[in-house]
Length: 232
Image (cartoon, rainbow, N blue to C red):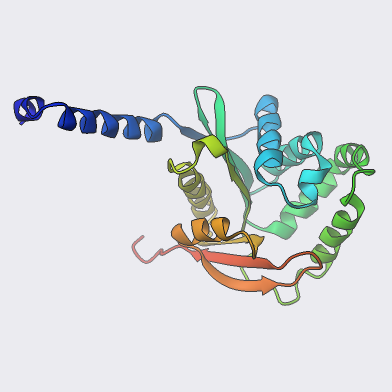
């Protein structure tokens, strides 16, 4: 069969080479969970967040604030930040938690001072105060008209040069695997109603629309995925 492939000319040989290249793109991108000591990676995550997640108050607060925030999220119980990298280059990241309220409380309890210090540096930027107030309002009213579960995919971003290579899906699976370790079989993710690309991505990975929440700026869509545990 190998001889037949070789004798059939360059078309089969070129197709063979293309298949090998595609496989290489999937295999060489590793996913691992960040630890407190991975300071450089947290800065890279913050940079990617700002470049790919353009909406929201967190982006306005800047890279230094986000680097601190993601570090504390990674330290909180049953929370984590995972990255996909290829030869030291960050391709994408995902953050998630088993319980969003417990995560917020833990982060504020342990990281309030450094977060405030970094946040104050951005207080004069347009939209920061209004955005921060809207976040507080959402947290205070989070029990009203809210879908379950409390376990959440908090953020996900893939470098624009690394899309359509399975990286986003591998990051989602990394989070789902950890949720399974925590005996959690469902996950909620929020995105803006106008972000059709994100909605299509999550639906292709098994999430289904469950809820729409009205905000002063733009409606938010909640999507939920429930893992099938009947086979385990």
